[in-house]
Length: 398
Image (cartoon, rainbow, N blue to C red):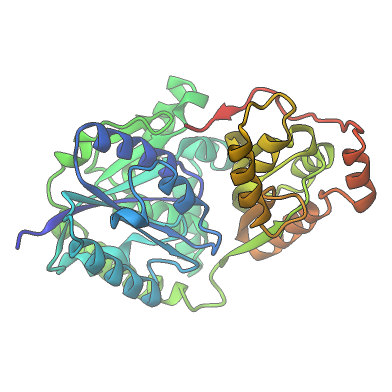
């Protein structure tokens, strides 16, 4: 049986892989292409998997979506889970035309490429590296400090984030500079020139809001395994050791779960004061007492934070004074809300914070102090207003 093409969306935490995936799925649906998806999230909350499934193009009930959460897909255990996922998708009742794999931002491409090189069921047609141009501008002097940082780590036999960033670029068959809408053309060109020596054989494209033509994937040739043979030979031992070595800068994920809302002002202040450089990513769903009907998506990468409206809480809809629901609709909604475990119906906060342990611990503690106290909850229920410095205009995630 003919092998199914598979494309990997790789790239560091918060670079924009999920946004890109969502755009690709919309195009596949419009073109009637049967796409199956595997999403890897190192956090057990699996925020990215929820967002992908929310497109309604793929889902577990359609036998074309599998989420691998709580594991790094490049580890031995992660590769075993990937093997099971590929076997399941390729033997589904409706065989896919293409498989897309979105890795966790901490995943390394080397084990994935080795695994796929001899795979009997799928054929690798692209390792796309999504590179956060805004992060390179802010943290690595427009990208110019990235290669010197790598050289320093190599000279001192150390592995830090720069090694992973550079090696994700080295193994790529296509480089996509994301968030270029926030930078000037000159800055994008500077970043492209700075990282080009890491992989001079591939194209570098600017990517805004995940807008990439699906044809870029469908027309891609088979991955050139021969090109990276020497690279695998040079890096294999150090990459393998990085999953077990205490001397390697370890990325951890911590989860915050609470049914209370955040105090808008305290949350804003905590982000200004405690969001350190080594908090690479935080994401999840939350609510504010000033917008208590809105289910908000928290999306932070490096120093950039955005709030997105993903939907409305059922509890908020039911409490709206001007809602026009029939008695049957109200009864159904009330039953759905009653099935939720929180004090505030379905409203709750689920966040994951990813980065270097010390910084993650500090930022997590600061966020936990932002929840409303019991006295503040009573104030909110009595109609007291809270200061809310967050932008009133939110991105609607469609």
